[in-house]
Each structure stands twice: as structure tokens, then as C-alpha cells.
Length: 250
Figure 1: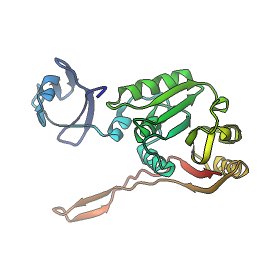
Figure 2 (figure 1 turned 180 degrees about the vertical axis):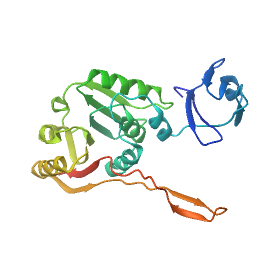
Figure 3 (figure 1 turned 180 degrees about the horizontal axis):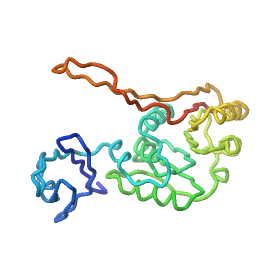
Figure 4 (figure 1 turned 90 degrees about the vertical axis):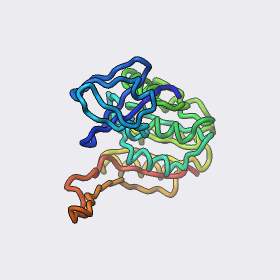
């Protein structure tokens, strides 16, 4: 384990992500939390002000939603779908353009670990530095090689099993990266609006991709409580954040 991360949940269901170390302390408006109480293996701890917390191991989704960011993240609902579409497994090699804050990189890297590789490009040094910190802050090994520059310059040939482009104009890139892809490599483009989607789909068609599909991922939570005789969708839902365009290189 690289980092000892723990998730604290208070009585109202609020979540707090902390990095635990011997002798350490975390300070909240609930009071002070002693890290040694957590390291002792307790499943429930009490702060200096008497507030109770449940102690849990954080999921990758918990971590991504709490980590610092300099760029908009790819949310877990899309990241998990992207991993599924790309059919990633241990040993695969993934080309990523648009490191962002590292949220998608984490999902890609965990899927191909330990013997695979994510090669992540970004033209913005400060954004990629935040992504590096976030990936290195996770508790598991993530196999990633960071590169500053334009993904069009990727030197590998017939190397990558999959590619993800989180770029505003992917049509300027697609034709330049196809030599780096293996036959039957899968691609996902992440785009926020329909005019971009239309142009990107046309570019994929012209660049030798087949099986092209466009989709969005919507999540609606339900409030279910037998005691209150309640079972209805919540008023708020996690709706559109981006379109995903999928294709296979032939």
C-alpha cells in the first residue's frame, strides 16, 4: 500500500477522506480525531467533542470525488463505463490524451495493473502535476507514464490496445494516432456537446473505425424506506455530464 487512506462517515452520512499516520491528528468542526485510534483497528471512533464516526476503507470513487482538482474531472459514472467499453484487463496498454486531474487515469490504470500501462499526455504542465499528485496519493499502484506535449507526437507503433481522448477537438488528433494503435484497438472520446460529437463521429468514420456508438450515462437515485412507506426517485439526479463515443479500429 502506498498511502494509508481512511474514510470517516458521521451520523448524518457525511464523508471525510483522510491520510492516516502514526501519531497524527485530523481536525474537524466535530473535534479532533486521533489517527492512533484508527490505526488500532477500531471500526467506530469518537472525536474530542464526542462526535462518532464509522471508519471505512475508501473506494476509488470515494477518493476521486474528494481529491483536489485543477480541471473538471471525468466522473466515476463515465469512468467505469469507459473501462467497460475498452474491455480493459491486466497487461493492456492505454493511450490517454487529457490527463486532467487524474480521475480517469486512476480508473484506467487500476484496470490494467499490475503489468499494463497507461501513457497519459497533456499540454498543460500545471494540470498534469495535479494529476500526478492525485494518482500517487491513491493507496494502490497505478502503472502510468506521464508525458507533456501533444498526443499527435506519440512515437509508438502498433502498441496500444485502447485510447481515450478527452480533448475539445479530437478530430484534429485521430488520424495522427492511428499508427500507434493495434488492430481492433478500442477508442472512447469524451465530449460535452452535440456539435463536437457530430464532427468527431465523422472523423472516426473517415479514419478506419467501425461499430461507432454515441451514448451518455445517467444516474438516478431512489429514496426507499419501508418504515416511512416511501419508494420514489430523488428530486435531484446525476444527469448529463458528457457524451461518450465508442469505436473499434480496423
